[in-house]
Image (cartoon, rainbow, N blue to C red; front, side, top):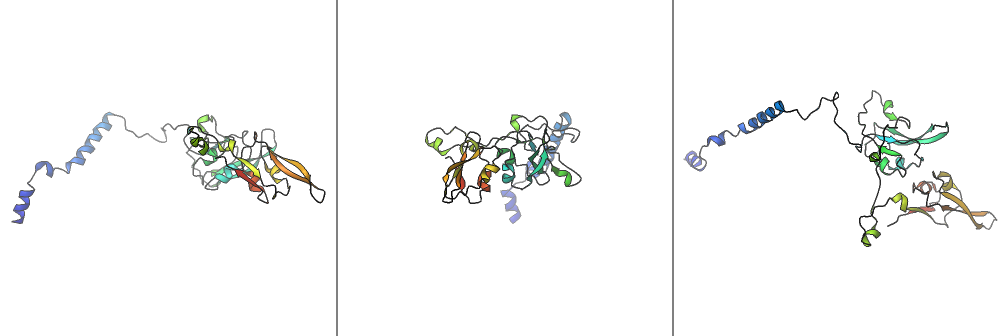
Length: 247
């Protein structure tokens, strides 16, 4: 009785009983398309797909443009970048970044936070090696032939003041707006900020003498050449400097 009621409620249907054929038909249809047309895959590694210029592969370096500000070292989330000593074209000792691509996340932060666009991204992603030592790319090995503007990553932001003034489309770089500010009461005139500035934007200027007759030196900043790398802030022994963020 229960079976009869079930069959009355759900009568037999030939089309419904052939539901298992649906995926088979789809597979055969796709097979017919691939026989007639070229498949979507390529014969890698003999054939390679086109990669855009701004693809975030391994980091690249413009050796002569780098100012050794250490911004890429501080911003790297995997701590795979460090500055090493090397020779430039004239034989002088300079500091340049070295990247461990075995640890690199290919995030592009080093290129994004580089104030002079010396670090870039590259479309190079085939980085397999036999040893871990071979995965360490020195400054000369980081060079990439044919670096274009599309491989640069520009860090830009919209200021709250521009939004309030009805200009939300304006984009500015924080390296051109934010500047270090001195708290004179904490400064000990150690000249450390002047020594670590990579672009010589800091100059110690005399502001009178103290009770011992020694000159009081305070740093003054050249806003035209400063790139806001924060080296002076990081190396100040008394935390007398901080970055004034323009809002």
